[in-house]
Length: 307
Image 1 (cartoon, rainbow, N blue to C red):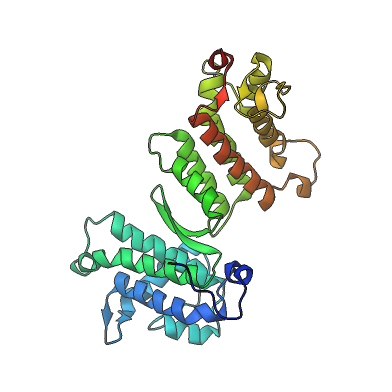
Image 2: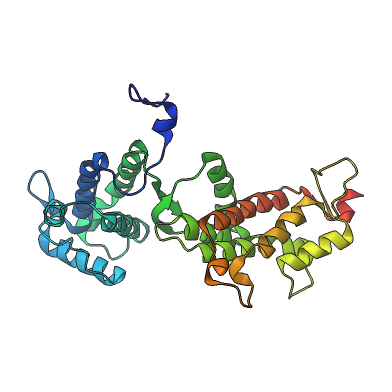
């Protein structure tokens, strides 16, 4: 069934993603935060409110882990927001925290209290409800679940997401595990672009080096690209019929990933020049997805494969 587009709103406007917590999402998110707190802390009254003492402990733990005074104290989340005058970024961070707490409940069901055991089957529907709220509100954030870590992640193109998921969901593939780390580093709620770029390179190395330089313990992505050029590797697609790119265009992308990493190079580069931008980190992570898929599919051809 096609999604409804509000009357008077264009398709482009409807698809536009928004950051933060827009005013029209505040009430829905507050209701969800309250529901999550009730699952974690127990509830009373109708409608349910979290048990105040356990909620206080939950907020204390949130403040300790974020190392900031959140101002979320009160009998419930509605009290908290009325005392702060609005929903700032701390509420997104708290949402991320509650996702993690709920998934800890779901993934580690041992030593749970009778209250927590009774709420266990409500965790997944609660997370699904949050994703519905975020998606229908056009939020740039979504509920992400991969490799045992759950939290808010930035939405990306669905086709690229599907390609990445195929790589990351292979439990036996180191390249998938590393790509998952890079994906979280760039699309998580607290992005680290430098870490994302560096880990994307490691993810490609994990699959490429074992094919190109299996006996070289000191091999790197740039060295592997050089080997591909020297040995005349190829790719299923070449820029012209004569195949003039020694090593194929896959090695060009590999080399570009290494040479375009700003904080890899020492010397007298300025802080601005050494900083990894969001765009460059995204390019590295997306390139890693593409290259890993190509190596897994046998599209990067050694001289022996060509014969």
